Length: 328
Ligand code: TRP
Ligand code: SF4
Image (cartoon, rainbow, N blue to C red; front, side, top):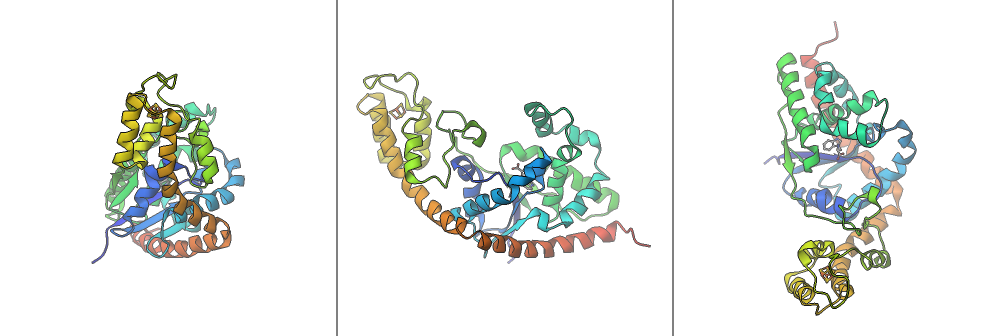
């Protein structure tokens, strides 16, 4: 029986942290048995907020894909590829641009946020077209599902509208994919805010055990628990959010009760967390390190995956060219 296809991608932002892992990657890894998975590096998308980012793209690609492989993405079962090695994405994006009103793109919330956040005075055409390139990335593979976080839902929604519009104008080529929302646990960074590379509060999959320890020990806790003798409240403590993810119930209960009764200190509590965090991270870290030492192997995996992806892309583009006949 043919497996249902899923497709997702990430911009090459470099090494991944626990938030990226629990919010997306872990989910991708678990989907590999059940689905026909396509996962790709959105390297053109990395240029949409500044073409000078290109200098970092190759190294960031290696770091990120080392984490993918370390976390357990398996190039035998899943197709791992690079967007720019499948130039059909650009051709499809161009055709989509002919049927997409500019107003649709101006309405996309991530566009407005980017322009405001980065204070861009004259945002590029590429930034405005970001979600349309994403629509091409997705529809090229005719997936049933697109596993993404909630922030990407407007992009998948736009993708569906573009598919409908294209099909109406030219003929049925694209099934409408659906976002598959991943249940994302709350992953706080060391300062208690959402874990994010730009906040400098992240624990990376590549961090050695000593670094993880040095990040967890000074981590922000329940601010009301100022002294060792003050009872605390695990429900408002970012450390406890990590306990919920990594610590099995008996030890978690021990920490919660110890916190509420001031029977244990925050450092004791963090040591319990570290005891459970380390065995979760170690296999990923070791595997990613082995891959990171062989960047050529990573490139080979991505090239082989891109050849496979390109076969699918070529088949889709021949459907497209049939309904958009340009040649005399
Ligand atoms: N916009 C996505 C992100 O920032 C990355 C992406 C590009 C993507 N193309 C895609 C995700 C296609 C899913 C499908 O996370
Ligand atoms: Fe947080 Fe643990 Fe300290 Fe309680 S004991 S405030 S749960 S770190």
